Amino acid sequence: MSIPTSRTNETARIIIDTEKCKGCGNCVEVCKDFSLELKNGKASISEHSVFGCIACGHCMCICNNHAIRIEGRFTSAEQLFELGSKAEMSDYYQLLNLLKRRRSIREFKDMAVDKEIIDKILAAAEFSPMGIPPSDVNVVVFDTKEKVKAFSMDYCQFLNNYKWLVSNWFLGLMRPFWGKNNDQLFRTFVKPLVNKFIEYGEKDINIFTYDAPVALYFYGSPFTDPADPLIAATYAMLAAEASGLGSCMIGSFHPMIQYGKKGKAFREKYNIRFKSREGLILIIGYPKVHYKYGIERSFANEDWN
Image 1 (tube, helix red, strand yellow):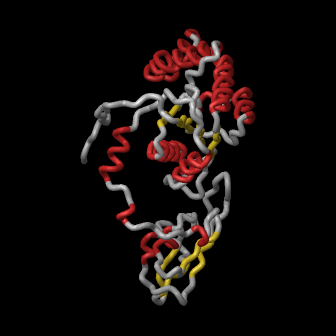
Image 2 (cartoon, helix red, strand yellow):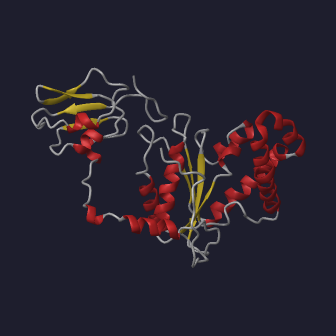
């Protein structure tokens, strides 16, 4: 029984070279699908797997003797590469300083971002963890200021179709059904945001993506773990920061284009292939402003059990 994604509905094949296998059992230990077992001192295919091989690649990556190959679900032995030494890794404090320096940037220099840098950012995001491989995250790339603004103005115009969604009569009608918290969210956040997008869009002022030189829209498919696009966007954000760029995540776009004929038409216009539960836009560019200070942050709760 395979786990389907938008890219495949087949299980991967596990190929074992028994001549190379030393029987260490590492592959069996890391396979949480129970697809492998030791028989007569050698790794072999188990008859007790949960889903069938999903091509996570753990067994192939842990075998020092190249005794196991995975083929299928967009994975193969040709994709293996040797990991660098720990000395080549960022340490905790280097990572912490990157995180502490990051702020949401909405003011950008009028400078293009080279395609090579965008490719590097996307390459880093491809290593983000996913629910079930192969990745079902999709990306739409707007790689010039002109493209970003045209898309943004189009979206602001699109929002005119949904002004009723934030009207007083509709919010009053829905309050008994979706409760106090959603009512507050719509009245204090969604309503003023939608109205401002429309108002400024009519003046040809972009307060949606702030005329950033690049916008990356990460979204999933009906099969995607909802967290996957958000994690990929986060990896892209960190890669952008490490590349000397400023960035800002925008979550207000995705929910509005998921429903109705106009939402479908908008998705089709911009090659957005699927409806999905979660998605994020990441705008990036060379920051026009530089902050001298940071601010300590905290979780709502931190309960240790």
